[in-house]
Every structure is written in C-alpha cells, then in structure tokens.
Amino acid sequence: MARFAVVGSGAWGTALACHLARLEHVVTMWAYEPEVAEEISTRHTNAVYLPDVALPESIRASTDAAEVAGSGDVVVLVPPSSHLRGVSAAAAPGVGREAILVVATKGIEERTLKLMSTVLEETMPALEPERLAFLSGPTFAREVARGLPTDVVVASRGMVAARKVQSLVHSLTLRTYTSADPIGVQVGGAVKNVMAVATGACDGLRFGLNARAAVITRGLAEMTRLGTALGADPLTFLGLAGVGDLVLTCTGDLSRNRTLGMQVAEGVDPAAYLERQRSVAEGFSTAAAARGLARTLGVDMPITEQVYQVLHQGRPLLEAVRQLLERDYKEELQGIRPPT
Image 1 (tube, helix red, strand yellow):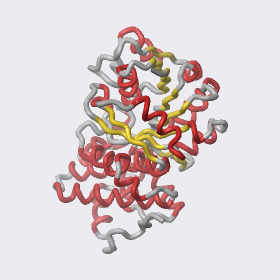
Image 2 (cartoon, helix red, strand yellow; image 1 turned 90 degrees about the vertical axis):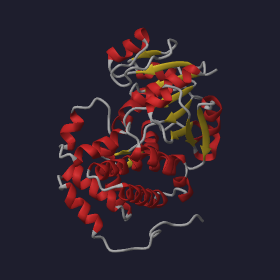
Image 3 (cartoon, one colour; image 1 turned 45 degrees about the vertical axis):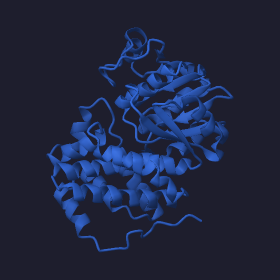
Image 4 (cartoon, helix red, strand yellow; image 1 turned 135 degrees about the horizontal axis):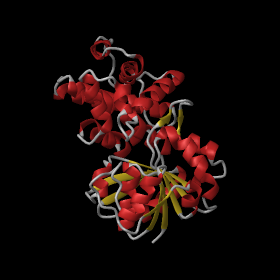
C-alpha cells in the first residue's frame, strides 16, 4: 500500500483515483472547484466530470494543491495540458524529496510548444529523472473507473521510476507496461488527439471506413515523424501510447476529440462548441501546438496543418479536405528515420 496524491479531478484524474483506491492505496485528490472537492469527499461522486460513477468512499479531496501533493509517496499530475505549468508550480512546494511524480496529462503547451516534461523541468527543477514518469495509453476514463480491462504504459528515463509505478498500479484490470522512451510516449499521447478531430470530421462527412483507416494510418506517420525529430524511438509509436491510443481515440464514441471533429462536420463553430463543455478536448489546443512545433523542426504534418487551419483559422472543412487530397504522391515512410 502506498499514498497517492492525484492532482486533478477531471474525468481521467477521477478514474485513476478510483483504480488506485480499489487497490487499497490511500488516495487524496486535488480539485480546483471547492464544490467538486466537497462532493468527492462527502458524496463520493464527481457529477461534473464523471457522472453516474460511484467513487470509493476512502478517497478524500482538497483545493490546496501543495497540501495534497505533500500527502503522496506518488504524486500524479492530471490537469489539462494548458494548466500543467500553473498547477505543477502550485503543487511543487509540497512534493516530498523522495516522492515519485507521474504525469498523466496528454498534450503540448500551446504558448511555448514544449512537451510536459520540459514544462516540469521549469516548474520543478529539483526533480530528478529517477523520480519522474509518464503514463499514457488507450484509456477512456469511464471504462477505467468501472474497472473494465485496460492496458497502459509508464515511461521514464532509465525506467527506474516507471518500474516503481508499475509495481504499484498494475492489476488484472489495468495491465501496466514500462518504456524507456518518455518523449515518444508524450508525443503519441498528444498528437493522437489531433488525429481524433480529423477522424471525427471524416466520419461526420460520411467519407467511409476506407477514409477513416487512411486518416488513422497517415496520422500515425505524422506522429512518428514528429516524435523521431524530438529523439523518440519510432517503435514506441507501434505500442500503447502510439497506435493503441490513436485507434481508441479516433474510433471510440467516448472520445471528446472525435466528437469535436464530428461537430465541425455538422457546421458547428469549434470554439463556440468547446465553450459549452466542462471537459477539455485537448486536440483543439494541441493542433496549434503540434503545428507550431512541426514547423519549428521542419517536420511535414499535413493532417495536423489542416486541422489547425479549420479549428483556429476558420478554413472551410471541405477546402481542408481538398488540400489533403491534392497533395503530391510520396513514399509511404518518407521522413521516418529507422532506429539507430
């Protein structure tokens, strides 16, 4: 048994807290909204972010990020990527000198084009790589909260932190694999949300299953090109954080990003749609961040470019589709470096 501090009370953070509590770990959560913290602690529900799910009664919640972080042998950060900098800075004073930090946030910081690992280097400069891990994989929060079978991957440099986390969270219903490629795991978890928007739009336009499969596969190529440009192992993208999470998010009806794409295909303004949602569709901001990062690195990401143009620049969806279909023909694996 260990003490876990789950910093973030959205659907994914709440689902992880449920899983950890079922394993009889001591779990404390941080919530931004006081009413959410009170509901988790007293009514054992989170109606705003994970409705109709009963939470283990042992979970407690607070609005003090540093206090919650200080309660954990393992601190799990699960805010939206746009808030990781602020939330991690608030939690940093409470993180114990030997505590392991697990980042379960998926995204790229839009303003700086930085991965979550780089953000943490700046907000928690004293955190050694041996205490930092990244959790990703094909995970719908509601299914994890219900205890349905799921596989995840935990990555860290040298795998010291990854193996420690694996030993604490692995179970019959949440099989946990380790990886030594935190960069690849982060890139996969971020870019798959952009591709889910594209796939949702493709399905909304009723382009068929062939087109859906093409978007997913070419999305995997874009993900791999960006990851390898940042130093990731291309084989990582054949695993849970790559193709696994990509397929789930692009095809599953529980995907907020796929739903966003389908709404765009119906003619809904994406920014207006997202303003009405309490939960974040990370693909919106990640489209801009991944596009900016790709341009900085000279990486070709045509689907990402068109998703960005539609979501952020108002390009008509059918014009974006035509831009993709009229591209010159190329070699399938162009721009993907083999492992050295």
